[in-house]
Structures are given as structure tokens and as C-alpha cells.
Image: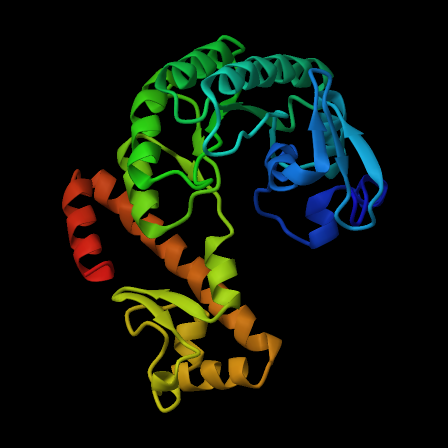
Length: 305
């Protein structure tokens, strides 16, 4: 919306052509971005007024605008405009926010111009309140959307509260449609979420920690910037067959970080993405073999020690 702008993406023929990417693309509606800019926004029933962190300009986002922008972007999966509340939040406010989120989902459905090409998912909210999560899920299911997301988690709540929310929310969502856990990407919660019936995840974690010199390996996290890697000529993960592990050593990647070379950031992020893709491939195989719980125990023992 701000950079490069919806007009440019429309002129380019959509995000796939713009990025030269033939795979699936999912875009968020802006609800989480509103949450992340909470000191710069004002929320009303009609939408959200916010101040750009880029140039200070003021904008008013409505559900109709959010879905229209996503129609122009051309992603395969687009998200209904929602309100992601902070942790902790008062119950009264959480109850108001789920009503707003459902109303906004209805408005997004009505404004959606490309339903045959783009799947519009609704987003379950409700904070840590089980009854509100259940109500939000049931209200959205009544809309018969192509898929459903669980939002508003991994925003500072303890792990046990996230688990409790998943335990009450996922059973309310139809098993025959995709169930998507937003903003969660650590290996433990990829597995825990899958055990509870989650099909999709997204998170900045693998690239963010990669850019800061931390990589995921079969034996746990490795800080490749550490001095211990200076003369370590092994791959990041000897058990990984990604391009990075086949071609580069810990010592070289550490050197890149120390020299301020952007290639180091790219290689670490690349490996982390490959690691999680490989992990989920193993999770799918464990499901097919009916041994997901055994796989969880084996993985956790090695990764977390």
C-alpha cells in the first residue's frame, strides 16, 4: 500500500509477476500492522485511522479498502480486516473487538471482487478468553469462508495460554477447510499446532533470527557469529541438505557476518527457511505413518535438549 503502492502492483499484473514468483502468495489485511503501530492509530467501527511510520502521513483503512488493495496485489490467499488486540486486554474490550472483527469480515466478503481467484480467510480473535474465542470462531464459520485463521497469538502471552486458546478454538473450525495459525513459526509450535489440527503457519522468525546470526539446526539453535565458529568448517547443520549447507561452512558464514557482508544474512535466512520446510516435510510423513507424537518427542529431545 505504501511501498511500492497498489497502482504499481496493479500495473505490473499482480504480485506474482512483480516478484517473478510462481508459487502461492498470502497477504495480510493490515490488522496486525495496526496492532504493531498501536501508538499511531485510532480504531472505530468504520475502520482504523493510522499515521504512517514512513512519512508521517495519515490514512484511514476500512475493510473495503483492505480487501480492495489485496485484490490489486493479487495474492492467492487474502485475509479479512481484523482487530488484533494487545496482551493483556480487558475482557470488555476483547468482546467488542470480536464483534468488530466479524462485522468487518462481512464487509470484506461483500467488497471482494475476485472470489474465484483469491480465497478470503476470516480471522478468529478474542484474546485469551476461551468463550470469546469460541464465539468468534462460530460467528465466522457461519459466513462459510474458504478458510479460517487464528490471530492475536504470539503477542506476548505465555505458551500455556496460547496452547489453551488453540485447544478451544481449533475444534470450532471445519476440518475440511484450511486452518491457519498466524504469526507462529518456532519449531515447537509448528509441531504443537499441527498436533491440534493446524494446517498453515507464517512467521518472520526464521528470517529475523537469521539476519541476526542465529540458525536452526537438528541439534538446536546455533549462533553462527560466535567465536566458536571461526575455525568450524562444518556446514551449519551436517544433517541438512539445503543449498547453504551443501556449499558453505560455519566459518565462512561467520566471516561474512563479521565483515558486514549482506550475503551472510541471506545465507542464514535461506538455511532457516529450508530447515523449517524440511521439518514440516518430516511432520507430514509422521502423520502419514501415524507416529506424530513419537516424532515430537524425538525432535524435542534433540532440538531443545
